[in-house]
Length: 358
Image (cartoon, rainbow, N blue to C red; front, side):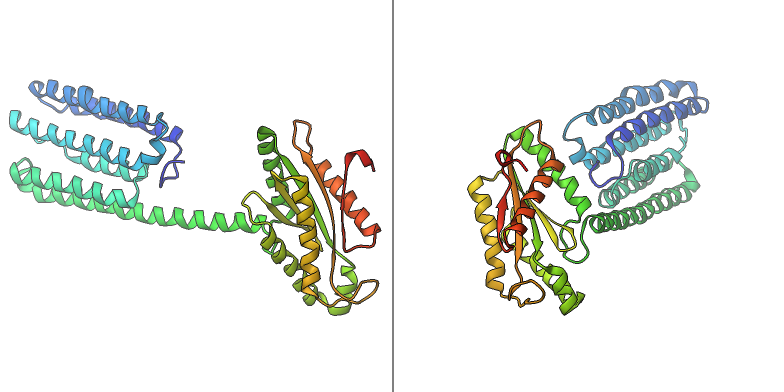
């Protein structure tokens, strides 16, 4: 996207071409008003000065740095067109005492501010330059005679009205963008833990697999389940149960700190962690660390078949990513490993290995 604008570069190119057509249309209209001896100067200003500026603006959108410097390019290009228009007004007056229509100045301003979405910061500078140029022109030459004040007032009001409009549009776009970001975050976040929800995790997991396919790295999937959690909820209530779930989330965030690590609430009391660029030894160390976190926490349980404290079971599967890697199958294997950990008495971890089969 274009810097500080809601326009894409493709849209900008389309608008430039439309602008060139507008200039051509106004050119035909202006030529019908101009005296014959002024027409060649007018045509020269449009064809040999304004058209090249428009084309340079158009070609600049194909440069890789255009998006970064769009506001500056827009400012210079459009202000150049305005001052060339001032030059036309001056030439028509000096060579033929002809008061060339000034409305084009307002048109350029509104086109810059509204159509091309000049930012408010650059819009202030643009408006000041436009008005200053018109004021100087009218102070130096009595082009519009007694009507100079009226013409100047029209340019000032039109330019500032456009600037205020841009400010309102910019604020509305910022508010909309902020609201969209919040909605996007809410749609991807588990409301209880603040971790990724299952939908967001699946999207991120696919991205990580694609990235690691290119780099040829290993990825490990950890599935965690709080042991005998139903008994805990039944005995202590869901409020206390939610605290345990949030505690598990916090512990995982302390352990997995890289930006590439994916931590999500998989459902209920289950969590999933995806770690890229990891060795087999590191997987084991992480699994041990998760078990140890609960051992140090010593959060009382002792209900149903549970031991004295809250514990968790872990299943994990590590794979060197290749073109045949399937994220769904990786999770299935980690889930089978979790089932084995439960079979072995809980409060432990188990690794799925392909040579062990099912």
